[in-house]
Length: 187
Image (cartoon, rainbow, N blue to C red):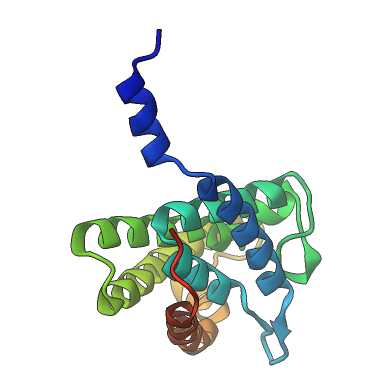
């Protein structure tokens, strides 16, 4: 027999919005991945989507949206940039950056739990999370390409995969924080 107090505690910890917002967030993240800004190295709005989801939905729902987004991509739905999908996209040379979005979410979740959701905490935790994502993705890139190309050095990996994206990601982070402050607070 289930105790009445355990049901009410579970009901308070989980709301119907916890079922609705992560799929909505995953869809918004897919749309943001499809938006490409042409340049020498094209930029997508994918990191903007990650930053905005976390700052707006919160760590728990934002992390669930990121996890669902990655799962949808893993099963082959074209949710990644350039309408890519499948295990090969997720576990290819740049897939570590996609998987690194989980670290952004975890960093945000823990920082907001520890220090409250002040704007400086949000900004710092998203920035630190992105740095961890860059580190994880770069290590992944170097490991996967070490046997296929001549040895990929850290300098080469940073030049290809990190340095061109630093300034745009900083702008996307600032934009995401500004947008999330304008959106209605989620309950």
